[in-house]
Length: 114
Length: 112
Image 1 (tube, one colour):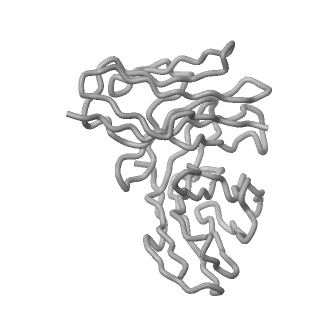
Image 2 (tube, helix red, strand yellow; image 1 turned 180 degrees about the vertical axis):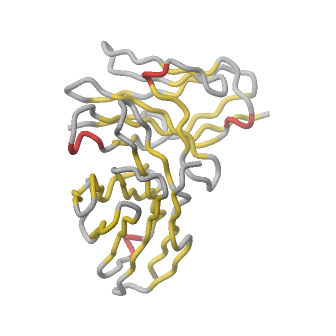
Image 3 (cartoon, rainbow over the protein chains, first blue to last red; image 1 turned 30 degrees about the vertical axis):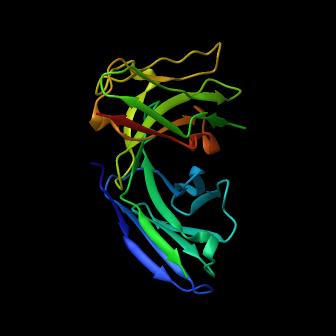
């Protein structure tokens, strides 16, 4: 398995509180992604990064921010959590040194906002 | 814009029957296509990519550019194939084309 660690694995938080999820990789891959997985919606891209301090929005970025100060860490922050952000969050990494390289996923973080 | 459509949310077959999970895509350039599988409460795992033309766990998928499809097939389903399957598409050139767009997934159940 690719060296990807997500923390925490589970979190319950209250509406309005800030939450930060962490993704750590040991593969030195340039590209990192945050997806959320919801029944009926599949996986939707929140934000992604193509290098240190280089990030861009995905299709469902509202209410989320990211930071990447080191190659190995990609943080996802919910500034003020809402119940609609209850979801399973997956981090993924990708090596684009060659064509058709796949994404490798972490184990996911199950977030519940009450 | 890139889009992936998996028309079936649920697919149920009996053990030993053939399986076909459909995937259609929309992309203006030459895409990279993948199938991912997620077993119950586990991480997503790469199953196939179109460039490899390989067979993994008995599954194959052929890219049909004329029909813009990348259907996943297996001639004889096994109970352990029960899982959620996602089709995904990526562009080839730089920048935002390196993101993968996923379909909504098809939940395959193989009955004994």
